[in-house]
Image 1 (spheres, helix red, strand yellow):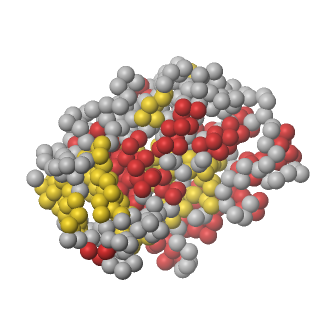
Image 2: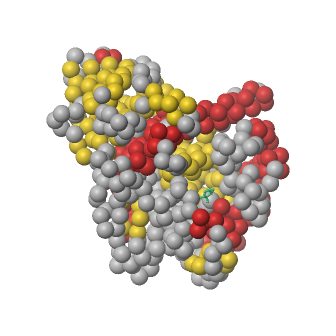
Length: 507
Ligand code: AHR
């Protein structure tokens, strides 16, 4: 048995959770859109061809904001092809696919309304520039009386879509990105685009592209140069990260959440360095708008025939992947003071928590569950958690603590949720939490008790949910040996080996 502990005190708060931390991503990639969210003729489809079975799962997942339409796709995207009665079929080079444009901005806006999510739109700064971004914004957000806003009304949307959140391109430092460019060029383009867009709609929130990932050779320098050009014009800088288990090395993989924290801290430091240099009061926040586990397969990199909605990036996730994803959610919450937006990539079929079959069912992957629980209970103030934990030596990241944890306090109800991952595969972990300060005046009225202890664990770390066996892995409520108990201001729980735990305390 491992042993770990920490103390919770409402006086030590990291900050309020922005609900947009529980975002997702829909890209025109593989079957995310076509036969994912959109499948006219499917038994569950509504009159717009939106799959109702998928919408139900999206609502259950608790997604708050959805980034669209890409990703790499956006850097060759012509938004006009996907609106109105005449859709153009195009070659889509980013993912070597045939794009029918049957699903476009109007369908996405309708889907977002049904799903109850805020849309987050990306503009094409790969093959396009300021003018096209302004045209798209005018079409989407201007009330009427101009060519483009009247066109939207003609297309059936008299009311503007009112999209507040916009990304200025995608991964513009990546050699794979259509129209990628050096930092100084991109910084100038992002600044000019942001200024012009704000002339049309001053209330926008804008995200500038950071590096495509932490290991890019220009990481850090790219952020600094781009922000020096665009600091006054943007609100957030983007971060992207994908993790996977390599070489049968779960210890390194399970430390991904800690790697993600180090990445966030590096970007915060860079933003604040530019702030100091430019002597600005404003702070740039972080939009972690692509994160997940992703096992790249050779077929995705090879030349393939041009196909519509090919099966790409359809990763099937294991229990180990779900626990790693839990750690990533903990990492985001632990930095809620600066990470204001985060999008798990992606939502359906493509490295996704939800899977579908054309004409068939939709089901939850293992990674669905930690996301859904964090989105549901991770609302309020994040409390500072400094665990005392045994460590494991990892090949990739050196020493990493075996306990990864955070806690969120809902100010209204006084309910506290502890999210904790036991990264050890070999043994359970006894967790002790000193919660005496939570019982102090202003804490939970009438004293605290354990409301529930839910756990995601399995005897087989490779267990997966599939079409044939969609409920193989799901959370269960612990009650009995090992379940959380509270006595004398001390919470005690036994976290099973390789597990994601959600412990709720309230009155
Ligand atoms: O999410 C899959 C791809 O990963 C996105 O299109 C791109 O932005 C990133 O490299």
